[in-house]
Image 1 (cartoon, rainbow, N blue to C red):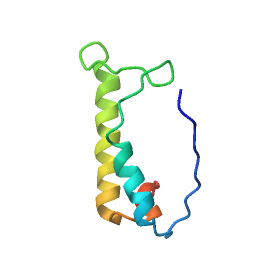
Image 2: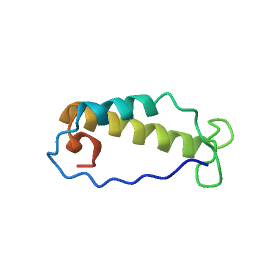
Image 3: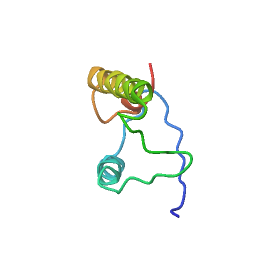
Image 4: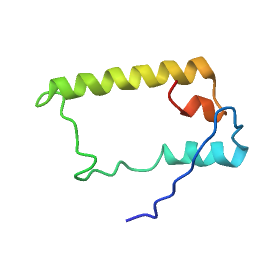
Length: 77
């Protein structure tokens, strides 16, 4: 199991190029499923899947609204 890393971001804090590169690299990591992150089957659990898709769409709207590269774009409004 990998090492857990936690960061506290403050609104308006600008991310460094290195931090942005780390986030981009993390997108290419394989998905890790366990009891805290179970797979969501759209056929077996359509309500849960639909809720996830609504949450993803809302997150994407917030990121687009605030732009990339700032801590504010990664936090909830």
